[in-house]
Length: 261
Length: 256
Image (cartoon, rainbow over all chains, first blue to last red; front, top):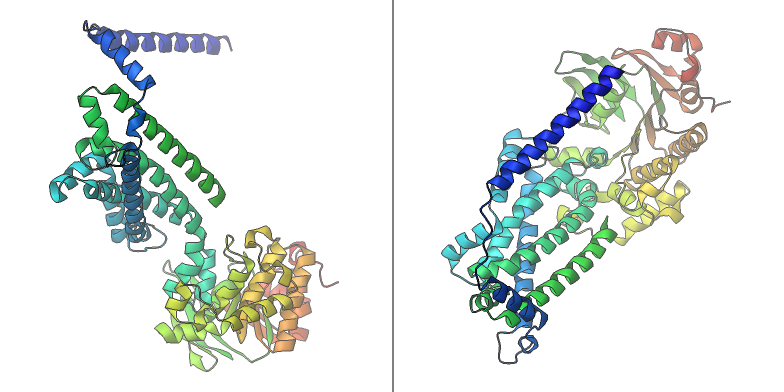
């Protein structure tokens, strides 16, 4: 008993020493923080800009305004998610071990899905800008392809957890493989499918706001322009718009998802 | 109705599931297959609708060889064979109605089924089937909201909606309590007697087997060791099938 206790104390002391060592090592490598003389001035102007957003930018009948930018962003996210939700279906079936008995096909599809997931949305968007030119279309393609990786993985794993006893029953009634899938497997994965697609839509809305920064359409483009000319009031209203839109979509989609499952 | 001709089954690992089975089952019979677990009851039953493949011999169902049938022919033969499982095998997330309707999918074109287009007649059939098992009011509940006995009766309704000429039941009451066992077995008996649907049922409980069967087939290590009318199935005969005297857990106490 006593030995156990002293061992425990020794172990704790060692852990504390190790943690302290890591901290010391990390902070010693840090460059000395240096503020430029103008830093404080810039920071205060950023804050004042954010606190006094440029309300006239919200709606401009002539074009280029906040609402249209947000709508563009939303459209990119929606279209991208829509495309991905279709593209991921064949991959999900073929990557589910219990549905597709051929191990080589399952392995290949699982690999393809992981391979797509390797690329961050921004990288995909850069590739598509080179391929189809800058604009909303490259953003849509980037999100549409990028989301296949995540959706395909989640849905195929959900399918692997499906109760296959109903499939046996359908086969016994004389149903062919397509009918069996429709009646025994699809009803079990459909609610989660919609839930995953909605979740990915939330992610895509957020991703679409930055895509514009590299020229793939949406609210990111006016944001990067406003930032580069230090138009803080403009930056303020754009950020405010993004926050409101993303929060609203998260709340709505969260509510729907809670009902689905 | 069903004819086994020299049927044998050897599993890939070398175990013999069925050994040279020659059995003929006539229309309207209520056959109960008994035997220890692992004696090949389930294999025998599932070879009838070819959920399991046999390695040798032929099985004729309704005049057609199911062991030789391919593609659409196989689906056609299966369409006439209803099946009831120990664990009900319903789609738990779907409604009772949809589960019963799934017995009808073999009758319609694939594209119609993908869109879920059932003719009105099928829905009436499904409701009728549910009435026969005394649960039409549960039609629009989700299957997983029902008790075990109710779920098993839904699966009976599914076989009825299928308009099967033959129903296979693999341990249909093994996961039910004595009271619901009686309800489910009574349902099967009524269907057998009133609609003339042939029944082949695997059972573990001897008293239940005796009460409902018109004919008993005893399996032991993949071989038929008894086949005859229920009157001939004496306690000694059962001891022979089981290779030892009867034990408490093989009597459920429903029949008394």
